[in-house]
Amino acid sequence: MEFKLTKDNGSSGKAISLSEQVFGQAFNEPLIHQVVTAYMAAARRGTRAHLSRAEVSGGGHKPWKQKGQGRARAGSSRSPLWRGGGKTFAAEPVSYAQKVNRKMHQGAMRAIFSELVRQERLVIVEEFRLDAPKTKQLIEKLKGYGLDNVLIVTDQPDQNLYLSARNLINVDVRSLSKADPVSLVSHEKVLISVAALKKIEELLA
Image 1 (tube, rainbow, N blue to C red):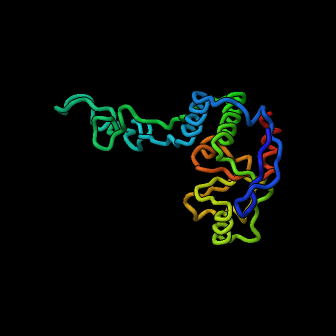
Image 2 (image 1 turned 90 degrees about the horizontal axis):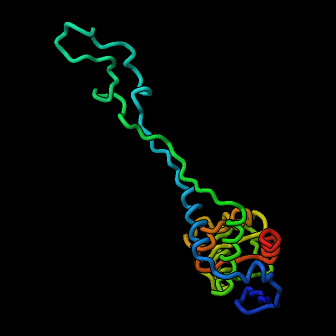
């Protein structure tokens, strides 16, 4: 399948050939939903925790002797029944990560890129770089392409692009290794260089 490059003035450029195996797949909504959900779940920190009676400091001796005090028996001042004691059912840090094997991930990425092509949300450019980390320069360059809410995918990390985009709410810059299903589906457009596109074909073919 062929796809035309986009010039910096928004017009169409030369045509390039895309792999049908990678960019011509059917939209698999259940698979994409599962993979996106797994990525979002893995981002949860799950660090909520309480102290159990074994973890609360103090309480190492018996508060009073067993008999003869006229009070209930007590073995520790850090019992959950006491003020300052441990939690009865203490929460522990948990992992919300879900298992996604390599074939599922690759299948979801192929389906996502194919849908981006069908919906004309994938903007392919020959190269997208900045000479210096200037946010104003990036805004002007994106205006030339007619882009506002966009994910920029590069073949390798670009510090100038990253620094220029970090203060823009609807603009995100990711190197190819950091582009995940959540970032791809959460932006209106995905701007990608030809070099990054060829690497995607090699990885997902």
